[in-house]
Structures are given as structure tokens and as C-alpha cells.
Image (tube, rainbow, N blue to C red; front, side, top):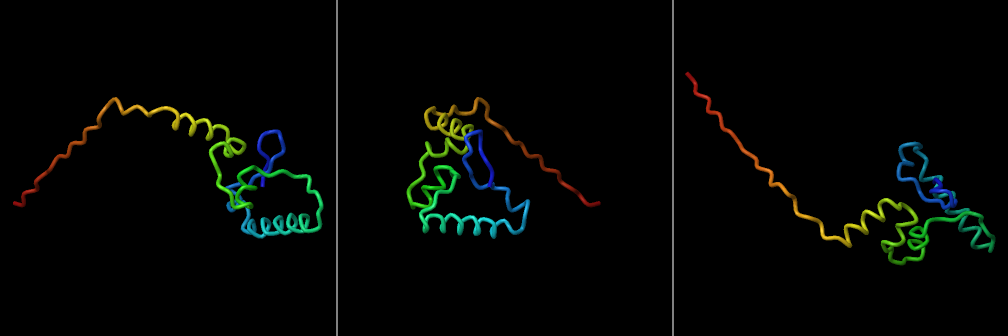
Length: 104
């Protein structure tokens, strides 16, 4: 897990498998600790990204939820959805040449 920006919101690092082979065991441990805290009605002073909570609640993730995770991805996707992409101004032309090999 790692913190995004400066507001101390935790999200899962997609590259965690490259750093440590036991990363799934760590996530399992964190899940158990959070589950025990919920069961015993204890507050954990940690905040996760909105899509993580929505997955836990089996709710649909929408584009606005992604903004908290990756602002650049959110803005790019929003721009694409709001603006009709322009067709390419050039048409690539591919030519093939054939070479005949004569024996002799």
C-alpha cells in the first residue's frame, strides 16, 4: 500500500508483486486487522480510496471515483468522453514489394 498525494489516503500499489513475493499475505493480514477492528467496533486511523470502499460494498465504480486515485487519468478520460476525437489528418499508406528469385 502507499499514500497518494498529501491527504493520507491509502491505495494498493499495482507493482507490489514485483517488490515482494509475499505481498498477498500482507494484504490478507491487513484485511484481517481491518475486519477485526470492524467486528470489535474500533476505529482505524487510516483512509482508503473511494473505489476500494465501493468494491467492499459491491457498488458500481464511476469515473468520479477514480479522481481520488489518479487525477491525470481522470482528466484525460473525462476529456475524451466530453470531446469527439478528431480523425487522423493523414492516412498511412503501406506498400509491398515483391522480389522474384530465379534459380539458374
